[in-house]
Image (cartoon, rainbow, N blue to C red):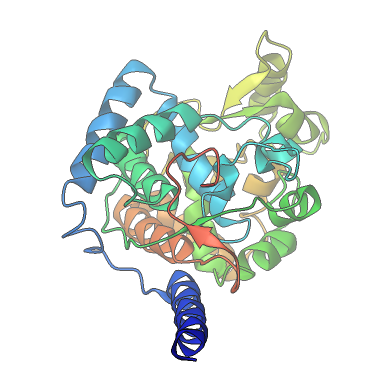
Length: 324
């Protein structure tokens, strides 16, 4: 009789532990000091690997920054964008909006270094958040304190959700506002975060509609359209968002919008409609410090978007696959 009463007690205790773990995974508050005791060198390790990677391949800085955006917009900042496809689960990487993403090897290198120093401790989601902050700093942009303590999801989003969850390069202002509001990001956050397009490049597929699609000078600078058409027909078909300072994180993006030289339809739609939206673009175009300050705040706000409640989460040992 005694042994039979012990078994249910053990089962009950195990169930209570599982519930507690699930609640912790879904409800932990993020904090900058999350790894102070468990992995005190986490920021130094991330910064060191990022610096080496960007020195070898400068394009990795905007690539890693883009990864963070594409991760957070789909089911929150949970590193689901890093998961490879399995026979049982598709990968977000394979969905068209993500097909041109790069920078995965940088995240893998950082994770490998952290697993050596602090095994099974730092989540891949936190790695992306820290690496994107350092990417901006390495490009001459602002830095900020990153709240930490995210967990990694065990499953990627389905392809349809991934496709619908990411802003389109052809979105108009209303569509962008709606898209960002789903992440509790307002128009000011959206305008500041769009400034990430001050660095990096876009494929012809994503900007051809803008540079070929209108003859109206009030919508696009004619000389800019002609130059971008030439880039579209070039070997790579890629064009820099900002041709003047393509690898410097500055406020040139907003000056380009005012000059009708936004590369994507979703860029140029931020300016020209009047009102507070135009005021924001004009302010950022002349006040680089205001842009840097608002961008940093909006990155923290976006980085705080959690996975859906009930999502199975963990700290992955390898970023491209769940733990088994």
